[in-house]
Picture 1 (cartoon, protein in one colour):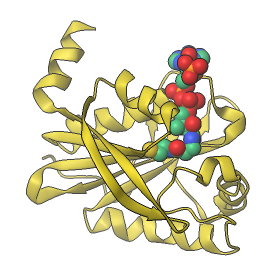
Picture 2 (tube, protein in one colour):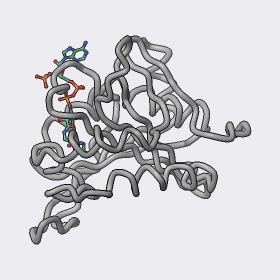
Picture 3 (cartoon, protein in one colour):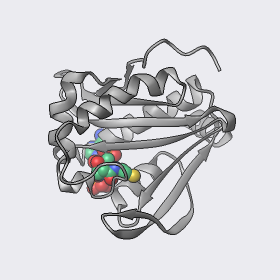
Picture 4 (tube, rainbow, N blue to C red):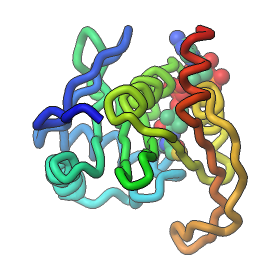
Length: 190
Ligand SMILES: CC(C)(COP(=O)(O)OP(=O)(O)OC[C@H]1O[C@@H](n2cnc3c(N)ncnc32)[C@H](O)[C@@H]1OP(=O)(O)O)[C@@H](O)C(=O)NCCC(=O)NCCS
């Protein structure tokens, strides 16, 4: 793997800029992630969304990057810079694998922004982090996320029954993944 930049790099797609979060994003994160429909299928986002959590979360990003464990990007819209949501990677160097995560504010669903941002993060995982595998999981019922993962060319790898306890209930998690060779083959076919 090439040496990584000192801080989380800004990435760009046709319609989006993925940039590091700044403290001033906390209010927008609180408003977007505070929507029960957004947090419903997220493992680490409680509802109601507590005051101060967004600030705390943003403050963890720098150490996660410098310790070589993860990157979280603010998904922003070109050209007005509006914050739409989040894309993240969490990787384990020992295994050369990375887990993908994302969410969008509800007003921004249905435009392909999640797919566009997630594809950019997957490119980063394979091309910059030199990962051998990228994976993701969604909770049972989250068909929107299943579509994003399928469109990314990930394979459905199975279900872990009752794997996650959220708000007092046990949930199945659906596993998805893509290997480097598959990613390279998809790239050369497109
Ligand atoms: C999961 C989540 C990010 C998916 O958002 P989404 O808007 O459905 O996904 P995309 O941004 O890829 O958009 C795809 C939709 O936009 C449509 N679309 C419109 N223009 C498009 C374009 N230019 N390119 C691609 N898709 C486009 C697609 O047809 C698709 O619609 P469909 O679902 O009716 O088929 C969103 O539902 C969310 O934030 N949920 C809450 C948090 C969450 O569950 N996160 C994932 C945890 S695993």
